[in-house]
Image (cartoon, rainbow, N blue to C red; front, side, top):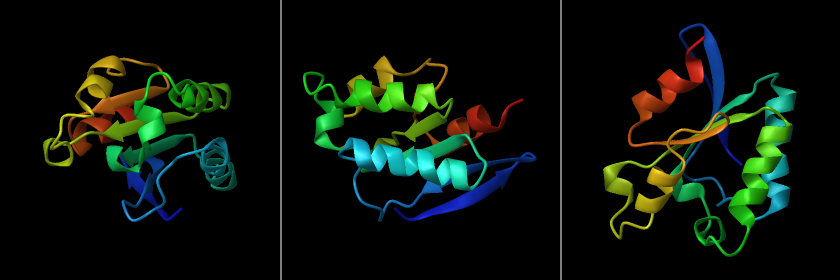
Length: 120
């Protein structure tokens, strides 16, 4: 997966590029954990477009696996669900469901996600 390290307010996080592969299985989740470990970081930002349909399907269990894996490693993930990214409204429920977690949250814009990841 393609990413860059963003420095903001004296704190850093990994931001995955929207051209990266969609996160669709546990191996890709473990790749995120590895990227964090290699860079000594525990904050990640992704665009909602990188989440697979399996993540959005509440019956697949993939969202629970991903969030549990990140939580066990104490990795905080911010998912940006911008208004332009959601033409069918498929991320609307996701935005509402995960708006207040400790390790996994959704945000309607990038600046809110950046603030959450970098606050002390």
